[in-house]
Image 1 (cartoon, rainbow, N blue to C red):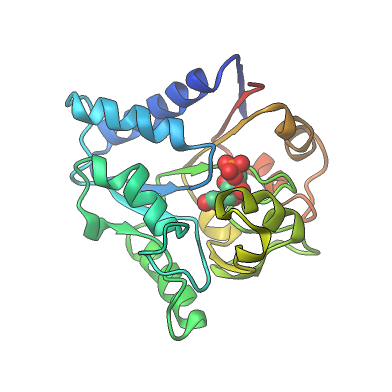
Image 2: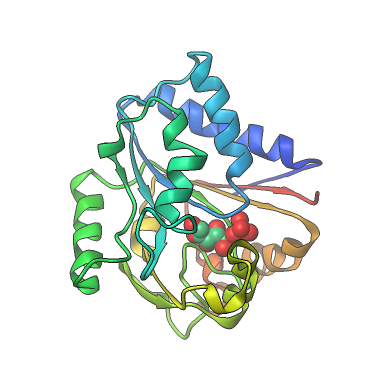
Length: 236
Ligand code: F6R
């Protein structure tokens, strides 16, 4: 594991964007696994700038997002599809048909999970996975549990996650209680992983996840077993 502590969110974002750019430059038709939330916004902004300058080209890239809320369609401004379009995809030269986010409004959600899993396999798996870290140690929406959940599945969001995400919805009661999330197999089979976390609030869980025991009660702790993981942390 490589662990970088930097002194600003801007540096964290540039460093993550640098690693993603290097991946795209070295393998223009790579498969990126992407995250939403507040942590990656700076990374996406930086990548947009470099794409504008012509330094990085997303035209052959395929992306799979980690998760989507159940019950929100892509036009809902809190859906992760909407987030990805407005914070990233609309501003780079990626082909939208090569960007995948689970469909949280699918009629058959189990079938949607299975299809998503199959699509990732068909694309050859993920070359580089970008992750944020939940306050309870979740990655994607793999919440603390008695076991690690293997495949793409429907997750019940824990109370702390609902509370943490209420800031985006304005009110806790509006936060969906379930999400479709990529499971641990697709995440752990990614050839390379970057996890980004910022703020004092993430310090304790970061220490538990990367310097404590590997346990499903802290889902991110499984990442200690990944052969190529880079963690970038900024206290600010
Ligand atoms: C989002 C996701 C979540 C977030 C995590 C941290 O796609 O998968 O695991 O990465 O909840 O969120 P922020 O970055 O908002 O602190």
